[in-house]
Amino acid sequence: MGITVEHDFDLTALNTFGVSAIAQTYVRINDDADFPQAVSIANALAGYRGIFVLGGGSNVLFTQQYNGCVLHVDTKGMRELSDNVVEAMAGESWHRFVMWSLELGYCGLENLSLIYGTVGGAPIQNIGAYGVELREVFHSCDVISRETGEAKRLSADDCRFGYRDSFFKSFVGREWIVRRVRLRLSRSPALRLAYGDVRNELLAQGIIEATPMDVSRAVQAIRTRKLPDPVLLGNAGSFFKNPVIPAAQYDDLKLRYPDALHYPDHDGWVKVPAAWLIDQCGFKGERRGAAGVHAHHALVLVNHGGATGESLWVLAQEIIASVEAKFRITLEPEPLVL
Ligand code: EPU
Image 1 (cartoon, rainbow, N blue to C red):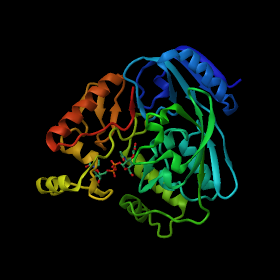
Image 2: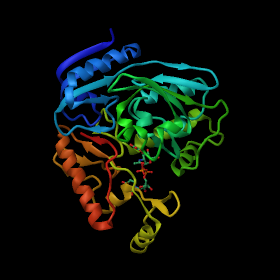
Image 3: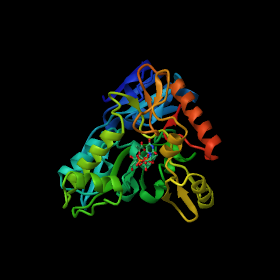
Image 4: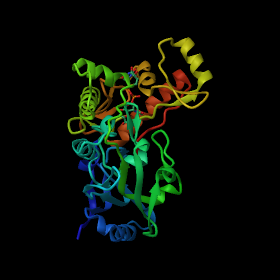
């Protein structure tokens, strides 16, 4: 059977921040066929406290012991279906899935290389990087209800994707656990190089006619330079979302800070890089004990070794307050803070 049950289980190795947290009960599943049984075991153990679904642990900050049941989805496997549709189990490594698809000659995931975490987490966050979001290649996913065990298939429309957002983050959406994800890729390269960093990286490498694999390598090089490897320095990627503000507020900001950057968003709104706002408040490279802000990227909180989740959360709140005082913009955390 692919189900393991533990009590008072240490989650330190299962979250990329590397903070210590104990789960009162822990259920790991590594065979997709056992999903209904694993959900019912987890429910019985969790009682009214509920189940927390853990994938790669790359988008969560544990600030205290978890008194419910952690259901660790560790199911693996990837396969090609018909019509350029590929499928992976929720516990599969996202980056492995990307590399596997590229090696099979598919195009579409190259810009999403080297994102930590699992396939199951990808639709929840609608992961995105270098001008591409998951929703553009998403086909469907199979989900199971954490309450009733009912299984169903969700289309891209059902998932209601937004910027780092989806149906799964809504009150009703929280009921559903992702089991398998299917993507529709392409066999004819349609590369997306508009994001300046990617084009410059390819040029710096002397590549004129890039292949999807070249783009993947370029993205990996940029990410490796900018973002810390969680194996070496605990982190969860961007800790805050880039705030979307009214264009009029941005115009006002630009008068006061002529070098303020922005990306266009929906009509009348612009997205401002949170990294820039935080940087302006002087937090880059700052430390509060073992909790810190990465020296190369102001949007990334890091655990220098032995930081508690609580101390990282205190630092995050200090940053939110400081950005609010200086810019009247409220930052929202990107990872789930438990
Ligand atoms: N910047 C600063 N100071 C810094 C770092 C960056 O002022 O310390 C400025 C840069 O000059 C740049 C701008 O902020 O013009 C944006 O920086 P970057 O290109 O690194 O992108 P980002 O907005 O910080 C977003 C995603 C990343 C994704 C990159 C590339 C969010 C919250 N983050 O970061 O996603 O990899 O774009 O597409 O949307 C993640 O979600 O965990 C993540 C890493």
